[in-house]
Image (cartoon, rainbow, N blue to C red; front, top):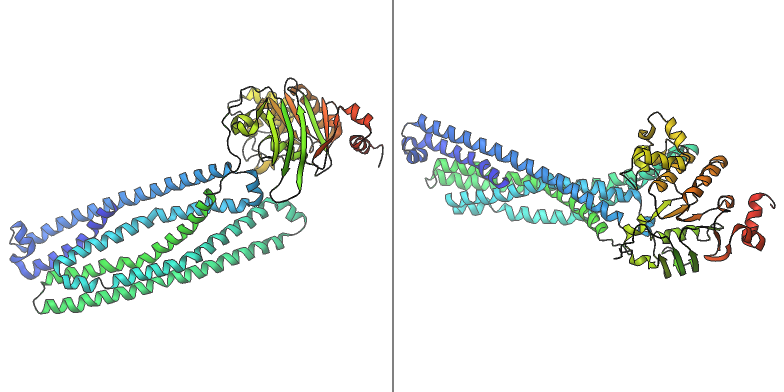
Length: 564
């Protein structure tokens, strides 16, 4: 449709030449010869009808071409964004510790939008420009090979200039996209920490940081704009040369009778039709270079491969829930210091086991390894006798309900957040889980109940309410293994006691792994594992460990106030 549109677009110039031919040559005109009509008014009437048809074809093909290109651009934008987001979701947890959320947002959203802007009209313009050169070249060659050569002389200059400008624009737009990512990082951090910024009266300093990044973006963009804007005057100069060639040489040929007046008129108009659209090539190249800079970032992100790969064994459902850590070693990539050293722990099916220890002992790391958010550097972790590296990630995580220390709720309703792991759950099932998590009362007290919007990261709720909702979310998933990482750290003592009573009911018949600082919350666990420097140094029931008089006993005395 783009090419057909361009064919119809250059036809009026031929019709203008035919009209001039009618006036000059009268009965001997080209139109008169084709249709066998001698009357000039009838000839002009025929031209008018043909012109109307050509304009209708041009308008219709332009509508279809532009509409189709834009639809295609939207489809590619959507598919690219979804491919990117799905790919990022499959990357290792370690990747997100190095990458910034603002930088990822800039690639997934802004860079994909840049690609859409080029696909929207850029390819259409390139096609019609190329078709224009071919069609006009054919007309020129048929009329006068000499004028074809003279009129096409500027085109090599335009192509060379385009390639030169393209090479100069490429690094400039790479800097523009990098600067856009920096702004996204700064804005994401600032908006995410707005309460802390206000609490310390740091708004001016935060705005200054945004200002520095924004000014840098303006500067690198200005450099790119200066270069891309210089392209159009070069093209205009080349167009002028081609037009003068046609005007002078073609005019002389017409005066000397070597070229018909109508054909000379065609060539004069065709020269502009040939060369003038090339002035828009600079804008198209500008869009292209912006899109290519974005594509490099998009494909750079797509080339990041996860090191944690899916296993081939599907975990039977429901899982029995027996967990075993055998000589597990682990170090974070950002640090050479080992976090776990020969870590051993056995959790029989259906039992509740707690992991305690000082900050930095490696408790949360154990949970991350169990969920395969990270891979151990040594040893093995098995679930029901299967090495978790051999299990599919989906079946492994389906068998576990996880409540993190860092509570996270999504923008949406209470119902949407609770049903994250079981979207098919009924309201009755959701409220039953909420009841066990001591969340029913405050949910029912909300104006819209389960339809209440919790806000971004659950900011409309208190810390205790957020944590109770995440516990209810894990309970609703009805997992074979319940994993709690400081699950009651943000609730008051009364709510904590109520949740503990509920968890004792929920834990019946399922394996429960609890990481806790408050020892009172895990005193009834079947077994408590005390960690220090990445190892289990003590293990037993609460009473056994208190009687042992070791590290756990010391922690218990501190928390109960027996010693300072």
